[in-house]
Length: 321
Image (tube, rainbow, N blue to C red):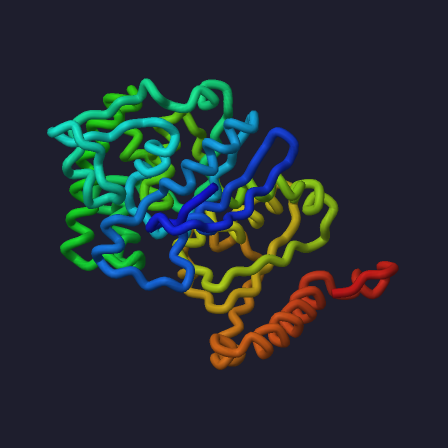
């Protein structure tokens, strides 16, 4: 059972690996093709994610990974907390309305009804940003606009998150969590996970572990990775940089094929990539032409392999690009 960011029923896939489960937050309460209004940004909630987590706990799952990112909500994960049994009430002892804007009315929190399965389950919070939940570079300031908030709503959401942080961190005895790097992921859902004892991990590293990437890279001659846009945000835990760092530990070169390259030559970790091909420099039309992009990726792959492996590929049985 699940609902989207505005309470409509939604079917969201959950990956199960024995006693482990992975929930993609964007598939539950993501934006999809929707363009929310400021009033919708105010009420968007992570309650549906909490319902899925509760169902997994009921089923005895021992480890739940939340793949954060792409959430339409900026509610500090309070929807998730409520779905797991927390009660958030205003000064008149009424339950708070869903969404981040209502958090400014928060007065008391009751945690006695939290799901008992939380005591034994491990919660992994996989994120690819280091944004804190509160502050001048907090979740609302950095991401709420793309979720439909205007300037006034950003201020309201920011104030609500800051107000709720103090009250909830007292209730969960988790002081300072709202200022931790990464706590602002998925509109502050990562912060709620921290209150529940969850562990923040780089999302790309989590999935590289699941894929057994280390063993694949260990015996490779060259690693080819890619991203739509390589820029300073890529250095904040995005997959291409995590892959390149992993490859470096095995002494394997990494090259990247990207839609556009906006990473300064002097940027930290630029040297992780032995070479970079930006497709928009070959043909700018690729931005709106998937077939052209596919052809250019093939050409770039062959060129990179020839440049960095050269004659070795010709003498290896079955070697091809």
